[in-house]
Image (tube, rainbow over all chains, first blue to last red; front, side, top):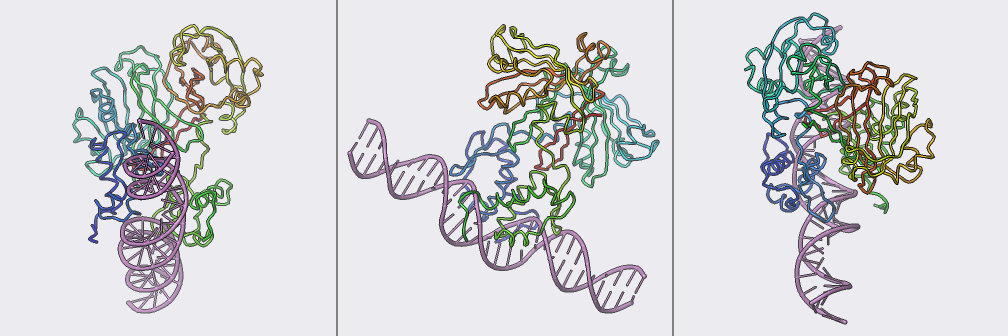
Length: 252
Length: 252
DNA sequence: TCGCGGCACTTGTTTGGACAAGTTTCCACG
DNA sequence: CGTGGAAACTTGTCCAAACAAGTGCCGCGA
């Protein structure tokens, strides 16, 4: 058996199947090839193929029971991670046209809150980005981000209206791995009101985010404020099921 | 090999380990026994033991990498379902003392919104409950629930200040199985303001809930309004991780 | 004393085989 | 023509073995 030195075989099998599903070659509800067929196709043993299928199963991509070939589950939902991190990608997935206006990119000393969340001393230089995000041209969300300096410096050659900051950072080797989002409500201040075209004091849905990279180092602190008449968060959960709650960000 | 007819061996191995973790016999951060030890203990082959460990891994209970024995991860948290359904139970888990004042229990025709969500005609009788929920005596949340009639009638013999409605309903054979929560922000109206001791128009964190029973029938529609300075929602997620996002309702 | 190499141990990957249990298909029988 | 049941096929469970790759520790040498 010739073995590729790059990636484990079960990874490649899983990736291949994921690709077929996302490209639509395997329609929703369609049955996957049987384990025996996959063994032959990839030249793998059954254990390896089953390992790949197990991965797809607990990503929720496929379902099915004993005796029946596994079927592609509907709602081949993208990982909610990107949904929560990238406004641009989220909007596209919703079928909306994302837009943005970068109000400010600045290098300045961290505020007390940002310093606390990022784990640096108050006044340590950070890069702050203030962006107004639009859906189909309508001001929808105001994003205040603070990046630690070594990451934020990569943003000075970022096209301010060029789309996703996260895609830009990923190209430069920064991959955000984990995030914690805290959701509450807050009244619009004067800046919020002006940019989002709402009255001062109007209730806004706020999502504060702390993102960390692969090593666990804290990279970004953000304060996003949504117009609650345009965006809501939805959580589905089922009792007793080990099925995890499903989170969605939705437009009304 | 004598085989038990009851449950697959890898299930029993996983259950045993889950038990040790939840009972604290395996402390957070502690290393699990090596695969070889588990094989001997359960008289299982390594493949079977690995199957059990894989299950724990994608439940997020254990972590660790190649070469190192797996370690117990923190946050072996209870199912978030009850947390999201029962204010009483949630408060107790947070170490706070839940309280409540039932403002009104009424049988009246469904409002348009409630009728829509519950899937009945507008004006169909429903039971509405308006309750003010307290944490350590402080007004924290205002809950407006509408139950369909056959369920809601069980509430007329419910002790208005006796704790959890859900526990009461469960005793009488109604078990809520699934719920969808929609989160946004809204300004306080006069009723909200008076009961929650805040100014009219102050931003509130709103969670609207549609709960269904085991058959999928819609049972409750609720509109809960939290003081955002007292309660927030938190979502943890990790990229690429098959680990599902983790949702928490927190007090500040 | 400090550092580095190697060894023991651990998990990761993969194969091959065997039997159990559930589903589908289709033929033969009534 | 319909139905029951066997056969073929599928996934679930389990074992045994081997090698690869990463981690940690111990001891040897400088």
